[in-house]
Length: 418
Ligand SMILES: C[S@@+](CC[C@H](N)C(=O)[O-])C[C@H]1O[C@@H](n2cnc3c(N)ncnc32)[C@H](O)[C@@H]1O
Image (cartoon, rainbow, N blue to C red; front, side, top):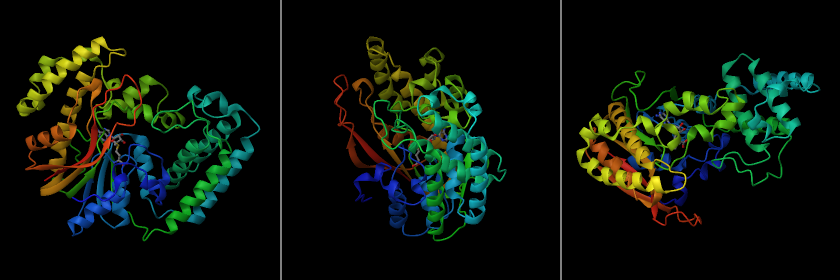
């Protein structure tokens, strides 16, 4: 496939596109990729599958073109965001009515500090007191609306407000306390202007119908709500093998909306449902390489295991000598095993001969190069795909100026399965 756009693997394009820009999500990819693929295929796909729906790039892009799609996303926070981005029949007058009731609630309660007694300490460190009070009051007022579609819509506007009124950037992907946002604060002003912008974005949409379904589901498992062979195209970007912890990335929001309150909650309610992509997702003592060698993944991928084992040994030795002692050897094994199950489920959901496009980055923990894209292509063959090809989008990893970091050149690729 010809990929004329350098930014295709990043979310930069999405920042300037209505609805795609309703939530700042660093792990996304360009919506233009969906258009490119659909145009290249020529005919309209009957239904697109997205096993890692994230903030909904594939589903929103498909809906703009009136194409059906189904997506899995294991985080409740992200499911709420996607659903809000896909409900285009939100009525402007009704929304403004709800906004008046939210405003009344905030005005009635603003002189009391009671709401701050329940404030989370992480949030206390990211907002000034007055801003945080308004944010919590808006949240509590939205809870009283009792109209799910509008609650989702206003909560998404509030999520954006969390980004825009923080003292420090909170989504890059981790909190950067060394940088201060000049224009922080003014939570109500920002919230109401975001709501108005979102309403005006909806007016500019070509239609107001819903074409996508989102399931809060773990893509490593069979989703019984999606029939065998329902879809004829898959466009997705799985978690990379790069130690990014999605539970950690979304914690400002999940703590604020009271979905989690601490590390333990994030582990139990978020991390367990995710593809293992970070060393925070498991306990080293639970992993036994001898048991792993007899797993379904290992027995069905014997040739690949010959590539993985030497890397496992090298990383195990290296991690015991390095500061931090991160168990990348175990992470790598868990990651490929998890992705084996994801690819199996993808094969089930897709009609025979359908294509799947996966945006992926290679990695080199402690300098040991892991050709993730190629290994996933090999795993795809083991679950029933017939062939794969890899197209490089860009080189990555060379901007790091950390002395102790490796200098292995990495790439971001599109893995195409058929
Ligand atoms: C790289 S992001 C996807 C980005 C998405 N394609 C977009 O542009 O918005 C990976 C997403 O997969 C989700 N995820 C991770 N493991 C999952 C699993 N086992 N099942 C479903 N979703 C999962 C994460 O919560 C995260 O939102």
